[in-house]
Structures are given as structure tokens and as C-alpha cells.
Length: 290
Ligand SMILES: [Ca+2]
Ligand SMILES: [Ca+2]
Ligand SMILES: [Ca+2]
Ligand SMILES: [Ca+2]
Image (cartoon, rainbow, N blue to C red; front, side, top):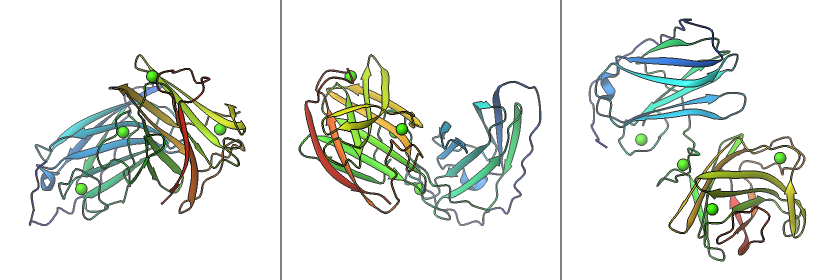
């Protein structure tokens, strides 16, 4: 990633947002045209599309290096009648990570109630928005992707976490190829914990939202509140990433508060992906939310 200091003033551009209706389909695509981005040529550029109501990320794109002041990106998989944010930033300080403006230059376009395929033109502007930049639940945990991490000595599992005001992003790595799980705020052993348990087998992720029904048992809860998830396995390790609300409103899930210490329970199985098989190792630890 190149690091270039640019002394010239940034263009005071206008944010021009125009939606051109082309056709009415349920699966909506957008062409994004970026203009007058000259101040960011040579920098890496990142963009993501978020379903505002669900908090779910629809897509994420990375441009390793902006080559020209004008460039285009396409996003698809949007749904008619849904509202989105398009968040994007140019890695102005070249560290490969998101830094709040003005260190990096970041913008948000609001896209309320999308109706049809269209085209958006964004002209460079210095009206920055601190968009945050949460981890991507893609089954790969990158260096620096999460704000925090904890290696649990008893199980050899590592927990990664990141939260904003409403969502909790978890990364979990186990030293096995069977299922792995994390539970939040148990009352006694597993009892009452909001447990997320997953197995990855032949590249397929199975993930379930459970509740600890007794100190030593758990079961599916009434409402699956997992917003997003992905996993991968290989070389004797499993990697799970998922997003849940801090407070899902489901009484089977424990509401979590930003800034608080949260007790967690960790478990995994060395080789068995059946979510009903008994753990190989388990332990209790705690994490502190931002
Ligand atoms: Ca940066
Ligand atoms: Ca990731
Ligand atoms: Ca597996
Ligand atoms: Ca639930």
C-alpha cells in the first residue's frame, strides 16, 4: 500500500446523487461513478453497502489502488423498498485500516427506499462522515480487523470482538475442525447464556442461535437473531465470524450494554461438526465491550 502525502488542497466538490430509474426488478443493481477523486489516486479505496434496518452488510468492495480520478464500481443484490447506506473511504494515511476523518477520508450516501436499478454519481467532497468500519463476516480474520482479541489458554480458542452502539461482531478461532461456540452472560455454567454455535463441514457453515436451557444443556431459541455469519476451516483450525445485535429484543438472548464487561463461555469439538455432540474443551472468560 503506497503512502503519499498530498500537499494540495482537497477539492471542494459537490455531492451529486442522482438515481436514474432503468427498470423495475426485485433484485436491484447500482452503478457507482466516482468523479474528481484525483486527490486519492494511489490510495486504497473501500466501500460497503448496509441494509439500514437489519444492520446487515450487503456487499463490500476493495480497490487496492485508485488509478484515476474517475472510476466506477457496481453493487448488486439490493432489494426493492429497502433503505441502504453506502459507506466508503479512501485510505489517506496508507495504513490499510480505517481511521476516522480527517485521517482517512470517508463518506456516506443514504439511499432510502430503493426502487429500481440505477446509477449514482459521487463527486469528491470534503463533507466527511465517520462511517466506522466494522469487521467483515467473511470467514477470514485479517490482522487488525477486530478492535480486540483474547487468547483463552484453557481451550486454545481465540475470541475477536468489535462493537458499535447496536451490533456485536465476533471472530472465533478453535484448534479443531469440529463445531465451535461462544455464549454470552451465563447465569450458571450454560444456563441462561445466549449461545451461538456453528460447524463448518465441506465448506458449508451451519450456525444456530441457542439458549442455555440448563447448566449443562442448550437448545435452539425461539428467534434466530444472527444477522450475518461465515466460517472456514483448514490446517486443524476452524474460523467463525458472525454479527448479532447487542440487544435483539428476544428474551432468550441476553441484552449487552456498550462499555460493560461480559462473561463468555467458550467450547469446541476437536473433530465432530454435529452441534449436538459434547465439547472436547470448554472454559469461561470475560470481554469488555467498547
Ligand atoms: Ca487509514
Ligand atoms: Ca473477516
Ligand atoms: Ca468442521
Ligand atoms: Ca435469539
